[in-house]
Length: 269
Image 1 (cartoon, rainbow, N blue to C red):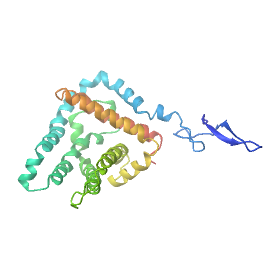
Image 2 (image 1 turned 120 degrees about the vertical axis):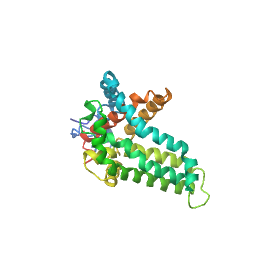
Image 3 (image 1 turned 90 degrees about the vertical axis):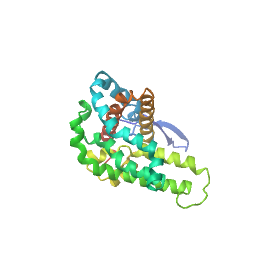
Image 4 (image 1 turned 120 degrees about the horizontal axis):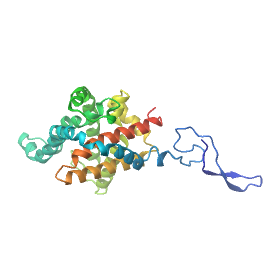
């Protein structure tokens, strides 16, 4: 595969002209290292839109087979998180613990349960989820617990630096949108970490570091994956929560599929 981009080249009289790059590219190249021209990877194999459409076309005819699992994980994980957040202020006051600290301690315990499906076998996207698969994958809870802890620690540092939390100092309000952007960026570049833990047998810290390095060329497509899933789940929740029966399993499958696409391009090596 040769690069189709253009680059500047000097002629004998010193003039610069545009010439076809024609550099031989690796089959997993995303950008040409010589001229910087992108290959078709970001518009095809690594495209958020292409992956979304591919997964949806496959998932749509069999979505009803995931309902029982969706109900199970909603009742055992997502509902508990929602109720915990809703009553966190009153509970924090009862236990005389700072609201922010209490909420994050609760999330540290509960959020890993929502990640358990990423511990299913690698071909889990080809078969409907079963509740028995969930219990078998509970062995990954300690690893996911550490991953959630790393994220909470990062968000705590941002809160301290951008709001003056704990320090008791006044912070420039401009840092509030900065914090929001950094949180969004962090989620965008690190969401494959949960699968690096199970597929590549990495610890949480190494998985996060590898994700940060791997996302250099794909972060915008990863953002579009996260954005699509966020909007889809918000819409699903808006219909009395019934839409979540479809959007929750679809979320797991799309993240797994996009991880595979990233892995095919050897971005985690």
